[in-house]
Length: 420
Ligand SMILES: *Cc1c(COP(=O)(O)O)cnc(C)c1O
Image (cartoon, rainbow, N blue to C red; front, side, top):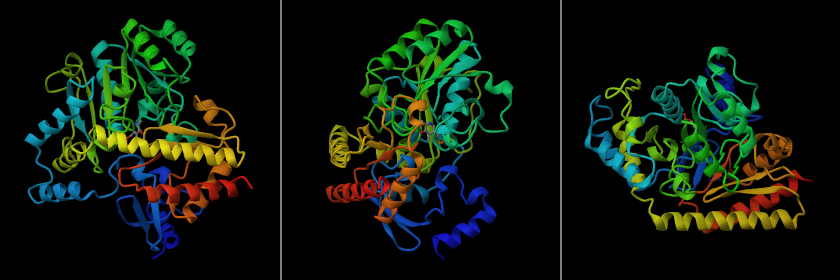
């Protein structure tokens, strides 16, 4: 069957024909048959260079041979034990060695679970109820954080089904705006348990912190007895081996991780200082549990992946990212398009926006109609990126120089058509 027929059938079984909203695009999404390295193939047999990469986890590209060998050997000796394993200790040590704020960790199954649990922990730790999140940040799909949320939720008004009693405890503030947060904290500091932030906003495209902004967040939270949570579900093991906290040299109180940590399998984690993490059950009284927590398959995939992420790995990958962004900027300039090439390390995006994007309000003014033309042209030219202006694109270590040259040609052609 082709993608169109599969989508028509899919709509009968799944709301909107998909199992996660960002996957849907008009007129119908491509259905995937297989993937390997930097490539992904649809059911029609079309080959694409993949810069969506599962929305971020696949820093080695699809189905790295060594990761898959290790996963298969683990699968043959058990896929879920409901009891602890030595490999969990191995992975914990790898994370704690690399990530500055991590002294103790809890493995969960997704980024959503990680932020939900980290927020509960922050509230349990300092006995306050409110949290601050930034407009357009995405911290998963649970009630505490689905307020002015990015990613797929950027396309909708705030979700129905979330009680006002829940969202009244979620305060929001524009990113990169020190005065707005100062004001909020003056009014509410005795009620705010935590500030949760994507150190680089990866769910409204890609927005970096202004110079000094993360330092400001660190200082103001510390001064006011508020925990600082870095949501590093994208940036963790992406910007550097220690994530954004190493990249920017700012140590938060808690970190949430997901995506890369599971090496392409479902996994999340939250970690932080001993005195905070010790409050998690069964040591403490903040409850968190999961049938598949520390799942042996995901843990093995995580170990196999993190094993490869040394200094040289990031040097090579980020070099490719720099080259790609420089070349895109040049294309944009040569075409005389007044739009923004953004990103860092192996993250990139083009904002169809005249203004430099520093927050959600500006990001929202991007020309999403032209973006959609650009997306479809890329697809026709054999490039798969997320179908939304409000997502980030990624490179993996599997992307060859040849892939990048093809990508650049397709970007140039697609931009020309989008701006015709
Ligand atoms: C993807 C993402 C999440 C949610 O992770 P899931 O594994 O999809 O639940 C949370 N925070 C950020 C920053 C993310 O990018």
